Length: 159
Image 1 (cartoon, one colour):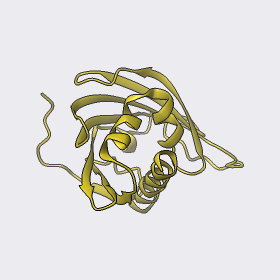
Image 2 (cartoon, helix red, strand yellow):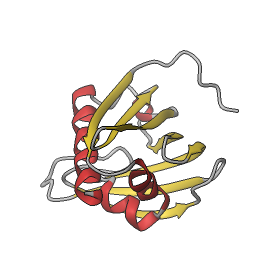
Image 3 (spheres, rainbow, N blue to C red):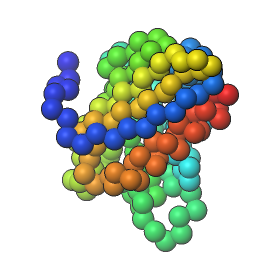
C-alpha cells in the first residue's frame, strides 16, 4: 500500500452536476469518455495506457493548444505526460489514485494523491476532487482553475 500520510499542499474543487453518481462514475471507467472531459480548457488529450481497476495503471498525454511561443508543459514545452495508478475504485462513491508527471524539472516530481468523491445530493451529484502532495512547480491558482475547468467539462459531458 502507498504511504498516504502527511500530505504537503492540498488543492481542491467541487461542483454539483445534475446527473446520477452512477453516470459520473461510469465516465471515469471508459478511456474515450475520460479523455473527452478530463483535459482542462485549452488542452486536448490522448490515452496511452488504461486499466481501470484497483492496482491498474494509466498513462495520458495532455497537450496545450494555441499557446503561441509560451511554454506551459511539464513534460515538454506543450505537453503534460501523466502516469497514474488506481488505488481504490468504490462504485458511484469514490476514486482514489496516484498521479505522477513525467518531467526533468524536479519541481514537478513526486506522487500526487487524487481523490474524486461523488456524493448524492438533491437533483444530482456533488463531485469533489482533492489533490494532495501537489508538486510545488504547479501554481495553486492555475491548478485550481484547471480542476474547476475539468469539472465544468465533466458536467457538460454527462448532463
